[in-house]
Amino acid sequence: MSGLHKCGSIMITGASRGIGLQLVETLMNSSSRPGMVIAAARDCSRAKELTKLAESHPDLHIVTLDVTNKDDIEAAFEKVESLVGDKGLNCLVNNAGIYVKSTLNEVTAEGMMKNYEVNAVSPLMVTKAFLPLLRKAANQETGMGIHRAAIINISSILGSIQLIWGESTHVIGYAYNTSKAALNMVTRSLSFDLSGEGILCVSLHPGWVKTDMGGPQAHLTKEESITGILNVMSDLSEKDNGGYVSYTGEILPW
Ligand code: NDP
Image 1 (tube, protein in one colour):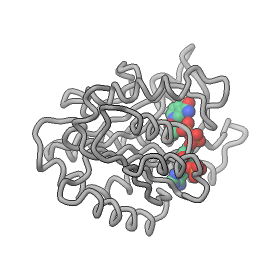
Image 2 (cartoon, rainbow, N blue to C red; image 1 turned 180 degrees about the vertical axis):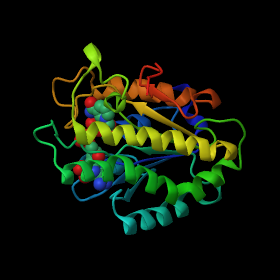
Image 3 (tube, rainbow, N blue to C red; image 1 turned 90 degrees about the vertical axis):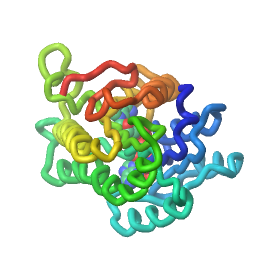
């Protein structure tokens, strides 16, 4: 986690609870935290823990952002632009996500579209909107990593087409799994398009985590997952660009 202070600014979507909130909390309590932490939540009036955290950390900035809402994205961009100024944004973590339960019996077209909208389309639209700020940051550094400009798409091992097979199969959920497979393609495509500008993009699997989404049976506490996530993020460099990596640092098969 030691490299985090090299990141001038970081923005995390879906920071009202679960992995996003824990990520913000851990960063705020870390001695080696990025210069500026921006937590995005779709309904700040319901994000009680996040607003409480901001009361004890006046340097934590909260922005309203429903990642599916174009007006929200535009307004969030303006607010973040005014916060980061000429330095730009060094790291965008597309964490907001939903899980629509969808076995073969349950799956519906609406469920597929909703999951796809939040988990695959929105990270791309948010990234596209924030590109001017990532570019601004990228223009001021060399190399690749969170010290310069990085997009971290919080994916899932359930998006791995190769691992949905045989004994390694975890859960078949048509809507969620396909949305994360699509997000992985978004990652790969962004890394192809943006690497020339020094902007890195990876898909990161946080592990199976005890959150509202992961449920109480999950293997990891939020703290364990976040420790791994931050270690991986701190070490990201050119060799990781366009990759699909677990919170342990293990490279995952697409
Ligand atoms: P939670 O359900 O605990 O939290 C989801 C977060 O996403 C909440 O902050 C929620 O906000 C936010 N969110 C959902 N929809 C939107 C939206 N339209 N706009 C803005 N924010 C939104 O999930 P986790 O914390 O467990 O998951 C975080 C990420 O990690 C997700 O992308 C998930 O797919 C991924 N992941 C999680 C795993 C796990 O085991 N937990 C495993 C693998 C991947 P609100 O409070 O307003 O609803």
